Length: 465
Image 1: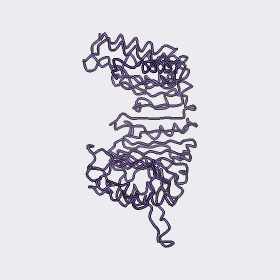
Image 2: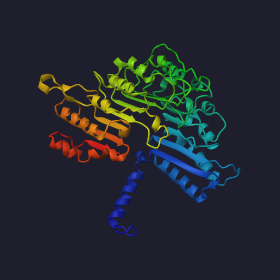
Image 3: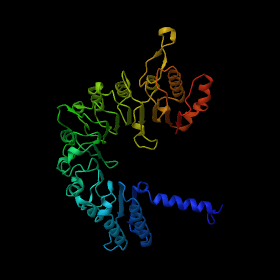
Image 4: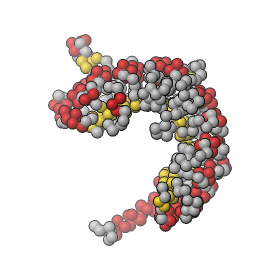
């Protein structure tokens, strides 16, 4: 079959599907584009830009009647005052800002690459032309000397009463978070991000403010770090703060070698009784005597009955801290089903500084085994009995972390105990052994377990990366 002479039936079917697709607005409700006007002195052909502009407008026209999610990025870093290609980009942004398009937007993402004056046009859209906008993602311009928060604070976008979700990147330091004219009482999701590699961040006072102003808050992603004004003494209100509706919490810490990143006493004042998903990412190699996440977990030991998903990335200080982390989250009464570790990549510069964490003794705590009681037929209690998904991330056997044989014992114990109904059935296990040759003993793992009479669910996935 030649693509230049398709069968008549295929041609008819393709036309029918195209007709159906063009009559279904929801198929066109998501659009993310990056328009390159000029990049370090290299300009794109005007005809190519014009074709992109027409395609974007066509796409949004087909989305009429649906709630649209749109991400806008226009790269234009030429220092030339006259760039003919800018006319096409200006025309596109003018069209995007027309009310028959903007009134469909449910989610708007303004990327850091979006320079002036395109950004100013988007930030100047009248409130009345954004009747459906619920989520705003905003990063300040890479090419503007004007503080990012100042531009956003003067925009009607941030003050929309329809907004329920905000993702703000690298806006610390200009003015306090509370100076933004946001209808905080309607906000249910907040993601306060940092540009990758940034060593500054948001302070505890911002979380205190969110607690006082956001009674409906359900999801919070927060990147802690020393601010320019409080480099050595991060602090916050030490009165208890109860986030009653919070189901998703992601805590990150910026790299700081000069002092604590978060005050441990302050962390212990946060209470999250409805938490379902929790992630902790730490790249701090500073002099913290203890990872501040542990006081937070100890304070919430009785509040974690709904927790289902846990992710730990970056660093804890040592194996003892990791064990405490796992015992609190995976001990008595736990309902956690998903556990994910994400460490450094082999090429990362701080790999050699990383503590040895995932040892065989740690993995053994997650491994069911026969108990001496009842003649060895009982099952010794293990951490995370409800575990269905485990991603160990990068594992370094040559540094003292668990080996392929240790992993085989873990799998055998889980398959054996799940067959007796003592623990949940595994659905996924993923490991990235480094170097690659250390995973050799895992070849033929399925047949080895089946020869032992262990039942392995057909949907179980074992991924060696």
